Length: 360
Ligand code: KG4
Ligand code: ZN
Image (cartoon, rainbow, N blue to C red; front, side):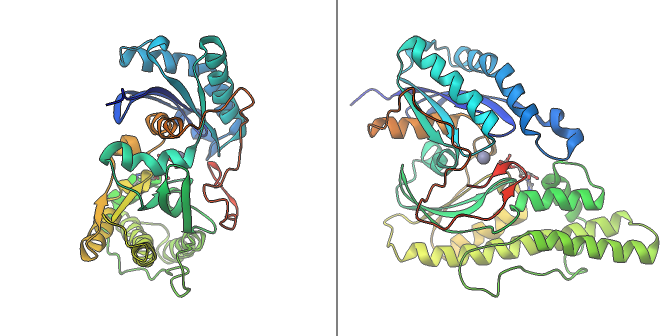
């Protein structure tokens, strides 16, 4: 048996500075320095602030990841780094840091697509066989991918505007609930009546797996203003009912679109049919349960990696780098940072750009 490769992973494409050491499919360490407090006052990620914070923190983060894994640079087989898509300043910070380390140590450099990192996580955590269906659903991403190989992805649908996490965050802001919006809307929804406010189910009347979430937050704004005008403000029960109505609308859309994506995937006759989710929205209990039930109906394994590996991290980058390196995909010092880098080059580009940068 060949010795498993050991890679350092570096991630800095958005608002998390992360480093990790992965050996084969074992995560030896994974360190994430969040930047939430730096951006809190601005209602979104400020690219310049993010880039500067990455440049300041990367060295410390890498040192911490190496120490936590009880490794040194000389134990590594390569350095994997997110080379896009994302906020260009942040991606550049990571790529320059990785190039410096590679030039100094002679270790191979492997440029990784951030979305490939998310999409390959079910292989790191559950050794899922290709091909599998993946739903990436976070504050910055929302797409269905059929993952056929470490470098072969078919995008069969995605959001044409906001990502669902973004819609949760905006809804929380409209209702006066704390950020990040997903967990606070979910918490409020527990005491709410999901039938009180009738909200649209965008794009459900159109065939295919594309989604849209920006209209939902406008509908929430109107419903909120209607209630506030009538009663002179929102009660906690109003907040709960609005939250529950919003959450069930998002969940209905995701479940119906997943049903359609599963039908497309089934046409490939996969030997071990598997559906995996990743991204912060995968933490939502109602959405997760709905998707789990759908998979059970279709005899498809449901895979939800632990949340710390679903949200932005560097272990997924190290692992994606490991698969790429094992297939001979080594880069050199000409590796460039790519703000846009679609996983499926043949798919039509997605519109807009999320609060966390390009959706690719
Ligand atoms: O994957 P992630 O940490 O970062 C990126 O967006 O890349 O996802 C964060 C997003 C936020 O928009 C947050 O509101 C949402 O995931 N989120 C949730 C829940 N927990 C986090 N959305 C719905 N329900 C949740 N429980
Ligand atoms: Zn991400």
